Image 1 (cartoon, rainbow, N blue to C red):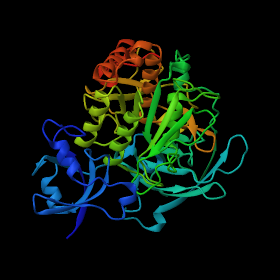
Image 2 (image 1 turned 180 degrees about the vertical axis):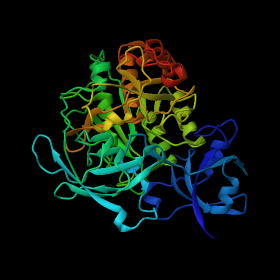
Image 3 (image 1 turned 60 degrees about the horizontal axis):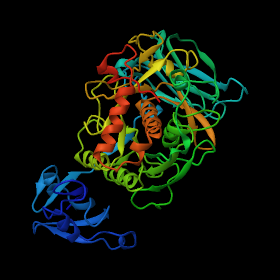
Image 4 (image 1 turned 30 degrees about the vertical axis):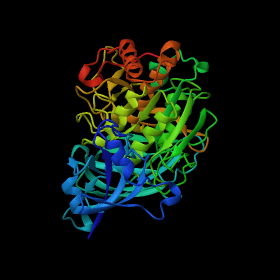
Length: 499
């Protein structure tokens, strides 16, 4: 009998209703404490389907359970016998443009002889030191829209890699070269590149003081550093960095140490945190704001479960975070996170989420839920080196200022609330370094930072009771501050907020 994991929720809300008795019903299911996880509790659901509790938020709250796979699939998404709801575990990815997403294929599958294939040599060096750049990814496309091209390669210790190419194709339609992680280089982007036997590129390192789309669109901040506003980053973990005012956090990944809330190995969360509140060589929207890290991605993991994210959002609410940043998403509904975000909003915290990077597709989840603040991405020409990797995200959909454009990767639609710069943004990365990244993952913390700034300037709202009225008022103030900049609402929602 095959087993699978599911999320068990009360019949209503995140922690059940005492009036309806479902809180007591959840309490009857043993709450798994950390010390008890070696001996998980068991429960018989409807007298037929034995489940095992693997993890739980509280006695009356959500639980991660294991049960028969077929029985769980039959029950998931509807009320199960008794005062419970059962849902599938879903998996979320960071909403940043990542080299792993660039995997052209087709050349290796073509019915061609070895005589028709040539080897193209690529050599990459640091434009400042002249040293080889090791571990950079090269993706060469015949047709980017159809994801056809040569299988990607990575530069070796000499900074060199070999791309296989068809002799009958005289040009590389689209060439992407990505910085090794952390992304401390700008990368390369070229189109209609004439094929020769070898190519050499000098890649520019990121200079944190050089400016980017964030500094261009937000040249100053009105953040009041002594206000006490607290921002929660639910992500891949935030590394200690001299530019960040990281005051604590928690690791919500099952089986890992709760106190290990630093980077999972992915620089994403640290980069996001810097855009909210870095102070120093580069400045986030709210420089020096108090940050808490809620790591929901396991060490080296590419995905996070909805249960871990639910726990992260709940922990941020428990710790009195005012703004919670979710730079992650999926393309299908997930009632589990909708409940978590509703709980946060009802307790005075605003959850802000990335719209997704599916190149013009509808806004993903959880951003598209009305209870969540959804953020798309725009960019600004001239804020990253010409011919660098972010150049591939430029479109002709301009605002009133022709330098501003809708990012090619950004999801769009009527569900959007705001937009922010998200193309080639410089921010903090692990190792006390700085790097550049693109995605709605980057525009999302810009809007989170704007919410932090606005709240810092409103002492009465900051001290108000932590309820739905408080969080709704903060969102209303964000909307009032926003400007469309000449873009269509379906691309930017209410536009870009002020800070």
